[in-house]
Length: 392
Image (cartoon, rainbow, N blue to C red):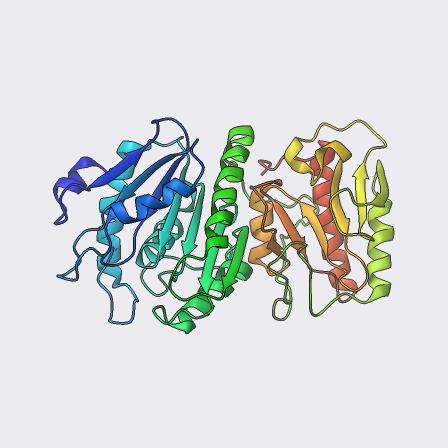
């Protein structure tokens, strides 16, 4: 935790912030672009959920560049020491207005998006979500961008197809990292605009914030737990080869490197034979998706161990042209599955659905069939109450 001393010792002085709302509900912190002012981005709150609290913070003056969250290298890439200094300064202020336990969601535009990305990458457990709007993550700036770094932290990503302010290479790298490698459940959209907010993006952001706040009110923040697989004594191995392409839209689907039909049927037979399982049309997925429901015996697993709690559906297998699965896992194990290349987060995990919901890629050979069976068997054990994710 940062302290008031870090503010008083900072060259930036005390933060200037405009606030709205109470001191208890989830706090949405709005971060403006380079050269803008906090009052300009605070106007966004007029189109966002009124039941949330808001704060818009004025960026410090970065090396004579006006109000900017960090000094850059001339092409929008932050200088690591400048980013670190401003993050420490910001966090000291944040600890005062939002003590640990109060959910904080970051919404950053342009330079503010890079700053929001730096904050959440630096300390993912501190934040309940982040919106990266028309900007880039601060790659190569001293914050970790490793695989599964943002597991369990929902992200809303919006970009302009005609944005000429942020280098396209950085926009594409941000898109790829967030939607494939980060582990973050990511809602992503690209609109035919430049470096400006698309009306549809603003409306979707409002809906995303409202649903995230509702999920937090009902379930709270997920706890952290070790990545212990009860069905894999030596841990999860790395999946061979590059990740398949997966759609960023709903329904989420595996688009390339799909599982052969005969392996899909072998997988279905194995999962159907798990104790207490019924099968049938999934209660949540596309027509033809075969759900696995734990309905034949009493269960003691938590609500978040199910994709559809009322149906007791803990996993489903997508139709033959896809062959992937959606599976409910504890967040720590979901992160491990992403980290080792077996899965990608579902965009609505922690928004409408359990925070550990992932798409598991379909098996391509007998070895992968064994691994995928183990992953889903862990989900089954969690739902049945036979496995606690805090087990060592």
